[in-house]
Image 1 (spheres, rainbow, N blue to C red):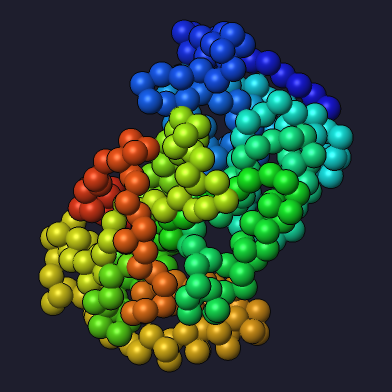
Image 2 (image 1 turned 90 degrees about the vertical axis):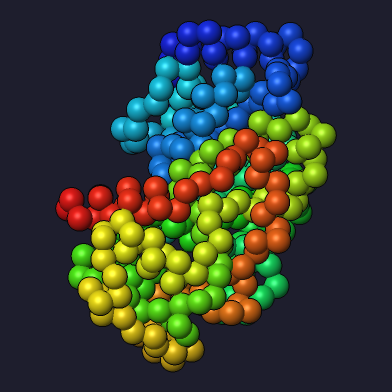
Length: 335
C-alpha cells in the first residue's frame, strides 16, 4: 500500500480540513464538506466530479488507484495506491470516509464493483455511489430489455444488504459524447440521419461534464437534504429533446438544411430486432445501438423529465443546446 499526501490547495484543502477536524463536517452557504474517496478519479465521470468538488473548496478528497496507475491529480488530493483485489488495502483506504464514489469503466461495471463495495461497507462508509451515471433501472420496457440496467438493481440491493446506503446518479446517455460517437443515429461528417419512428419522441440526455458537476453538487448537500436521496436515485438532465431537435441543432451549427442530408425514418422495433440478433453473434456495437434506440422509443423509459426537478438545488443551470452542439460539431469536423 502506498499513501501519498500531496501539497494542499492554497486556501482550500487545508481550510476545509481544519474545519472538518474541529466541527466534524464543514458547512458553508447551504453546502457541506465531506471526506470523499473516488475510485476512477482520472476518468470521464470521476475526473469531472473531482474537478467540481475541488472547486467548491470544502471537501477532503482521496483518489484511490491501482498500484500501476500513472494518473496524476491536482494538489490537495490524497492519493492511495494498492491492489483492488487486496481487501485490507481497500478497507484502509476507505476508513474514515463519508462517501465512496465508484466511477469505473464500462467493462468493469459488472464484476469490478463488488469487492470495492464490500470493502467500503466493512470500513463503515455511510454513502456509496455505485457506477451508474447512465439510464435508470426504473420499471420500464427499457429495464426489461437491458441486462445492464437489471445489474444496477442487484448492486443497489447489495449495498443495502451490507448495511451501507447508495445514491445513484441517473443521466441517461450523454448528449455530447454520444453525438461524437455517432450513437444518436446522426452522422455529422457524412450528413446522414436515421430518425427512428420519425424522430419525434422526446427523451432525456445529459452532457458528460454536467454529470460530474451534478455529482459534486449532490455530494455537497447538507445532511438534511442528502438524506432525502438515501437509497434513491438523483436524476440529472441537460436537455429534454427528440432526434429531430438534435438534427435541427446540428443543421444550425453546420449551416445546412434537410436538402443537404440523407434522412431516413426506419422503424425502431425493426432496427432493435436486427441489432439484437447481431449482438448475439458478438457484435458489441450492435448491442449499444439497440440500447440507444430503445431510449428514443415512445413509452420505453427514456423520458424521466418529471423526475429531474432538483437541479437548481445542486447548483445546475439551464444549458444551451446549440452551444453544446456547436462544440461537438467543431470537434468532429476538425478531426
